[in-house]
Amino acid sequence: MIACLGRFVPENDVESRAENDDVSTICKSLGLKGSIDFGVGATNGSADKDFGGMYSYKPLAVIRPSGADDVAVVIKAAHLQSNLTVAARGNGHSINGQAMADRGLVIDMGSTGDSHFEIVKVKGSTYLDVSGGALWEDVLKRCVEDFGLAPRSWTDYLRLTVGGTLSNAGVSGQAFRYGPQISNVAQLDVVTGNGDMVTCSESRQPELFFNVLGGLGQFGIITRARVLLQSAPDKVRWIRLVYAEFDEFTRDAELLVSLKEERESFDYVEGFVFVNSDDTVNGWPSVPLDPAQVFDPAHLPQTAGSVLYCLEVALHYNNSDPRSAVDAVVDRLLERLGFVSKLNFPVDVSYVDFLLRVKLVEEHARANGMWDSPHPWLNMFVSKSNLAEFNRAVFNEILKDGINGPMLVYPLLRSKWDDRTSVMVPEEEIFYLVALLRFPPPHEDGASIKKLVDQNRGIVQYCKDRGFDFKLFFPHYKSEEEWKCHFGDRWTRFRDSKKAFDPKHILAPGQKIFSRISNEP
Ligand code: FAD
Image 1 (cartoon, rainbow, N blue to C red):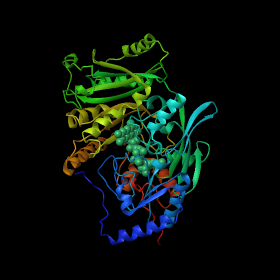
Image 2 (cartoon, rainbow, N blue to C red):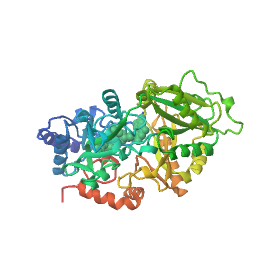
Image 3 (cartoon, rainbow, N blue to C red):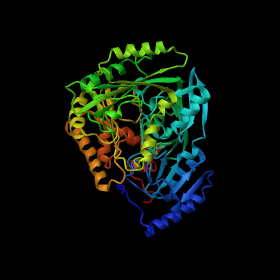
Image 4 (cartoon, helix red, strand yellow):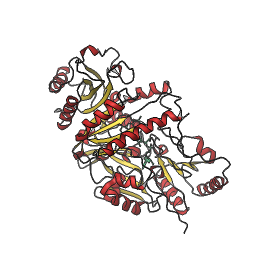
């Protein structure tokens, strides 16, 4: 049983049946080019579910727009109703119901995935104009296959939508050099909470542009984004390096992200914590990249503790590069690092396969039922100066036996993030992404899932009590006080922008930041 913490609409609820009838009448009168499902049709699909699997809020209707015009019509119609809300749904890979609308309208952006796909050149740079509903996986395949080009900054997993990740940040191992995905966008088409269709950029309507980036869907629905491209390499040397000591792991990770120029460092830097045991998910077997590689724990120093660290790096190269030249660059970089000798796992893969690497994890998890089970994940940014204590208390104590899924930890640079966007990160220049990506075994009962949610809360509370400089990534709060605390001195700007671009609080109700302002006196 999944731990459904959200509210279901009772079938005999007279009020909800009346609402259904109203919405059906409203929606039929809109003259949309796309399609609409009401009532049972709306709740038969996936709009009341997400990857987190812990919340379920049933919408009154699901709209599959044909493009931005339909999105604008729907938002304008919601304006005229006393309490109707609208949630854009990307691919529903949120964890805590953020893409849902309880008795509201869900706009399934997937139907607009092909609305835009055009390479444009502006002042010597090359961009892709792409729909907000497009999946990054399709962006990758089409850009590389048709043009030999690719976006610079990615997420680890690509079955996420352009609008969904740009509403959060979009982070992976390229972000130390290029910043998150929201630092790699030059222009957006947005339908605001007023139903206005606006093209915005750094120089045109900048307030809307920067607020929407990392804006948790609060100010508008992204229908097109202009994403900066670079030429796509053919191949990647992908390497995992094992560390027994936390200090050496972080020193090397920070060295690599401080060498920002191409060929001075790797092109991708991430890391994870794993358990010093033969556990198949969180132990030694989780490190090798090729079935022929074996993790021999005899190479570990005697001083190794119960958790170990792995730096994951990758270097881009082309088929035309001599192998000796690639080896020379890799050897020069590895010489500077203090990983455990002989615990070094390299493979050469195509660039596309490297970026699609989590697909294999997905296939495996789907096969054993863990993809569709609940995922009580915790994602946070923790400043460098608090990470050693976090490591001692959280990785070496609370989670020392693993979490049945990856425990990512890698450094990012604040100077690559734009303070004008809505996303919140710690104050220090170097901070770490910490991601606890739990895959509980299928059929765990609600109580077991709740325990994991409580453990996440305990970790967050520990960080608060210790006065850490940290922020939740994909924040999930229930009270205005907590949201104010999250945004700190940027709360007023966030609230005032909401007033300007979505004055009735129609958009993204699943984030639970603002409540719908009723039209009724
Ligand atoms: P949804 O979950 O559908 O929506 C997220 C929020 O954005 C909702 O509030 C929704 O209303 C709003 N929204 C959706 N589309 C639009 C739009 N067009 N305009 C305005 N608002 C919109 N994130 C990373 O940064 N890096 C990673 O490496 C990474 N890996 C992941 C791996 C997995 C397996 C999963 C499940 C998630 C991962 N994520 C990662 C998290 C992911 O970025 C977020 O969950 C993101 O919200 C998912 O995108 P989505 O398209 O499914 O959006």
